[in-house]
Length: 305
Ligand SMILES: Nc1ncnc2c1ncn2[C@@H]1O[C@H](COP(=O)(O)O)[C@@H](OP(=O)(O)O)[C@H]1O
Ligand SMILES: [Mg+2]
Ligand SMILES: [Mg+2]
Ligand SMILES: [Mg+2]
Image (cartoon, rainbow, N blue to C red; front, side, top):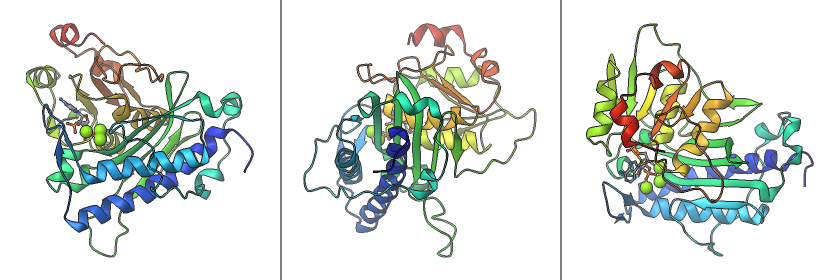
């Protein structure tokens, strides 16, 4: 096996696994048999894609890195029949991994897996809201990850390549994205489409937005912020879980952005944390404190992370 910090190889494998998972998601969509299960609560759905992709990611990572701690949304056990073949992505491997990761062992890495983010939108055919998220945490911090968009370009015609992966590592940067610098004075806030409530809306209204975009998926919304389509992702709700934010946070922070709760506090990703992000989520590419300072007291009181 290649030398260097193990997290470098885990990340390189995760990029390839996410590509393989994206292929599986596209196959399931094409088959037309989504196998939708209602997990209960507000638009809390699961499909065959969520189940199969989590099995694929888990089996693939464990086959190469048996000591990783893996926490996935769908809690699918290890499936011996899942496709576990995996290579290391050469684009990731050709980068120089920062030396500070050399002391991180396999068993120190917690992998937060959201096999399909934006499931509600997936079932409604809003395919560009869907992502596959593999986040790597060390010492409770989100440090690396992959956000794969299996249907990127799906409306751009058959000449365009379908799907893409964005990946990043703190100290190295993030790759696979393009930013269009937004005009000054604009404040487009992006938020949930399927999981709104009074508090979510109160928070948005208090921030004097120039527009509010409602889209599915935490991964999708963070990418929109990174690429300059929105100025902040604001979700004043405890509905997002650690697997929704770990990979997007690592990528955003690797390029100088921030993702915190509504109090401006960093989210912790140790293996034994509670899964919900009880303090809500706010993500920005810049001027994070400006947005945090606009969170009303009522929202802060309701979301005691
Ligand atoms: N009230 C709630 N109940 C269950 N899941 C919620 C939720 N609010 C947000 N989420 C989850 O957080 C992620 C982002 O939410 P949204 O798309 O509404 O912005 C989605 O992940 P999944 O699609 O992976 O389940 C969604 O299910
Ligand atoms: Mg879900
Ligand atoms: Mg999710
Ligand atoms: Mg999910």
